[in-house]
Length: 371
Image 1 (cartoon, rainbow, N blue to C red):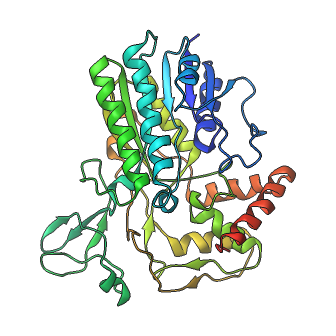
Image 2 (image 1 turned 120 degrees about the vertical axis):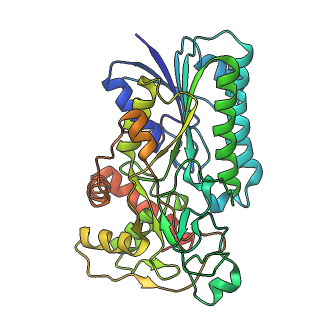
């Protein structure tokens, strides 16, 4: 039986990869430090697959990595500190957990005897910064972040730097230049490049998967850095209007965690994407206003989002995935729509134990001034 290690396997995305592997008959080991930002009690989550071997440990600890790697043939590296905003004031933590943690794993593979033949690494759409755009006069454009003067004038869309015309957002391909505007994004770029570089150097097949906005059951509702969906859920559940920055028409690409797990298993089984970078998204843009309205509808609420027209420094206007490469290389096709995926989260949050956690999460979000 093939032995597989999933770092961060007790987390949101990692646990679904674990489930998929167990279902396919792999022998799975989890290495996870049960960080309290994701696991507030510091204990294994109730939904963790009992058929997988759990090892509490940290990718930054050489002894933990050596023990976890025993007999492993396939590696999924999902362990990472997550959160764009938080990374801008906890620099040491993010660089240590993400960059050094990855380097620690790869140093083991470079210097110790092992059986690892393939590895997948979780990368991020945040590496792109702004998405790709098209000017009707000048063609494709890869703009920088919008300036504060423009934003203060409530001119939220991107404009062509050459002719000044408003730009049309386009699906963002893997070939777009990277424009990291957070420490988190930079460390995800580090993880991606380190794994691909060392994989090539040591003959270990490697694939980098750039996740877009992942959502689904098991998402940490107490962690405000996991995205707008959890915050909007908390506000609507507490009869508060969702608060939206800008005009609400900024778009993102929301992809179900189940589709993310499926993409990882496809990358593992196929050799057609070895040493490649692949976007994993739905390929469908959805506005933040639509996100709020969909969640309200699913809760049976008539609350309307509060559009503030305020802006946050560093926010991108549009970014959604061109998924043609992963379709062609792996035959990947997203299977869960945003609305269906949100139904799954809401249903999951309604069971008794999750409901307690959801109420706890609401308290945490209130403390942080997010609801």
